Image (cartoon, rainbow, N blue to C red; front, side):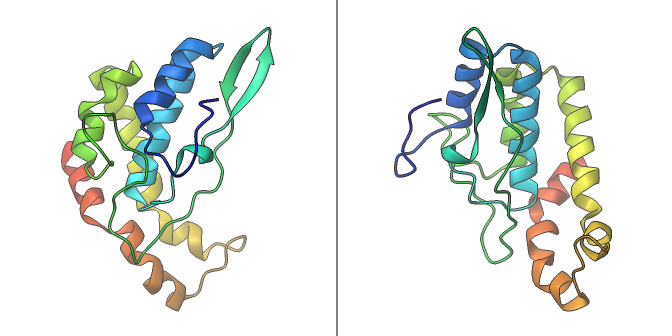
Length: 161
């Protein structure tokens, strides 16, 4: 939608602006984009480049945010996302900054806290999901991936809730 290259720096705020300009239900898609932003930071998905956020055509030039894809935790990386928060802030590296920017995504304080809580609780439950039959991670796998999920940003998110 942005006609963007992976090599250039881009920001979540640019995707948000595109949603406002072109999406059939901007409120829903902005909340979903912010949810993904929170999730990416909390699970250390540092490969969140602009081409990992797609759109689907609805009708008559209207679009919607495509389902999330290519989401991978990186336990060996620092939690600093490829996408910037906005053109002034730079790469996303703080859940506090993400929460402070919730208004740009048209979320009020209560809505932001609700979404943050939902994402935090889902990410906090990662071991149960990882050990479930469909995923089937071993105890060694859990140990290897723990730094991606059990990190400082998760601790800060808990204090914000």
